[in-house]
Structure formats: structure tokens, C-alpha cells
Image (tube, rainbow, N blue to C red; front, side):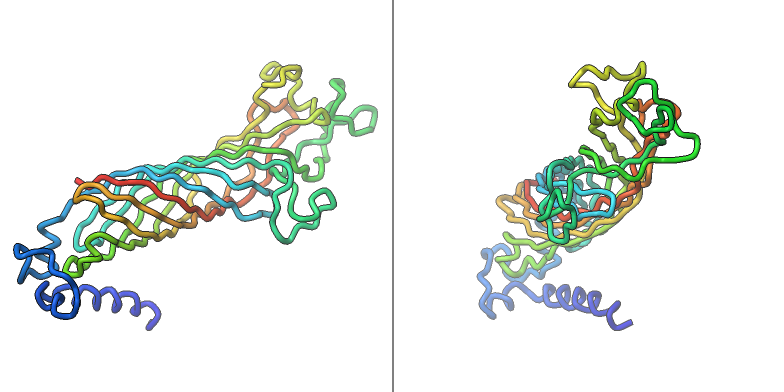
Length: 299
């Protein structure tokens, strides 16, 4: 239980210290903001500068972890967060996030065992489908193939593109000690919450899987054909994050943030794949660290 109460005790101590009069803080070395704030405690100063909401935009680089059935490269994401400040930096954050990662070539990460990528992992997502049979032989490039009634292909790693759109909601805290001048301009923050995500996994079919796109929904001879893909959600996960704000004005500031979010992507059948083959990607976990920054308006 002591581990549970330690963060609450630290937060209470910060709030208690911050309630000291600004003149007392100045006596310990903090510069006074001006004669208008002399004698005011932290709560009074917070009320004077308080803004209920912050709305901004953030841009991230994302680094996904390697999964048993997926290896994706570093990607990018954009976020539009709406944050509240209910009392002395304690509030909530609601954010919309859109992100993209490609799985192709070799993803250079430690722990690779593939002969084709000795320094990493083959990029992409793993797929399975019923074996395409022609006279008892597997041949996915033959338009006369028919799906096996009993057997699936072993998992096949294929180039893929993953787009995820999510809403996150959770608690947020900004260090609020307005009696200390530096913390009126530099504000660390941290938070975490629930992520609700919608995920789209796009395959890149090779000639060996010709049979999967030989149907009325695809044009096998078009290089720009949108190959079979899956859409699924909402999937539920979580996130944690932290960073700091640089307050330029009372209504505008820059933000720098690092974070981590994760959610499971269950196996799903592919849209537009030839009927009868039950083509699907295997389940994988999309867990990513993110790093970036942006700006916010306070109102």
C-alpha cells in the first residue's frame, strides 16, 4: 500500500509548499513577479491566470515494438488534444490521434533470426489463407486453383501498411507552483488513460497470391490496385505520457512530449479477398513509443 500512497503524498507536499505566500518564496531565492502579486499565495495566483481549457496540435515520430506476427518501421502521427485544468493543474485530456506505419524491407532491430534480415526482422504482417490447390499441388498463381477445404497456408509475412485512428481519454497533471517564477514559464506534465482505436491493415499481394485478387473487386493487372485489407475496431488499450510546456503567453505555449501506447489488433478477414479462401492477417499487438511536440492555445 505504501507504493500506492507515495505519489499522492508527493503531490500533496507540492501543493502544500505552493500555498506559501509569494513573498516568502522570494525570500528563499525566487524572484517576485511584481508588486501586484506580492502577498498572494499559489491559489490566488492560479485563479488570476487560470484557463479552463487547452486545445492544440502535436506531431510525433512513432517507434513500434516488434511483435511475433508484425514488424513495422518507424512511423508518424498527429494528435489534437483537448486538456482541462480543474484545480491547480489537475485535469483530464481527450485526444484524437491518427498514425501510420509501414512494414516493408528489413526492420533493423535486435533479436532478428531471419536469414533474409540478419540484423533485424522482415517487415510486414503475417497472413494465412486456405491453400490454393491445382491437381493436388499448391499454386496460388494459377487462376484455376480452388481453396483447400481442410488446410491453411503456414503464416506468410507480407509487406503491409497500418493506419490507426484513436481517441484517448484520461487524467492529466501539470506541475503548478505559480509562486515560483520558473514554473510559471516551464511546466512539466504527465498523464495516462484509455485508448479506443480503429485499425486498418493493408496487404501487398505478390504474384504467388494472384488467386486472392482474381475477382470482380480487384484488377490484378493494375499496379495501383488496392489489395485486400482489413478494418476493425473499436479496440481498447492504454497510454502513458509526459513532457513539458514552455509558456510564451498566457494564452499560447509550446509543448514537448514522449509517450507510450498499446492495444491488441485481433485477427481479421481481409476485405476484397477472393471468396472461399478466408484470407486474414494474424493477431498482433501495436505498441509504440512516441516523441514529438507542438503547440497549444489556452482559453
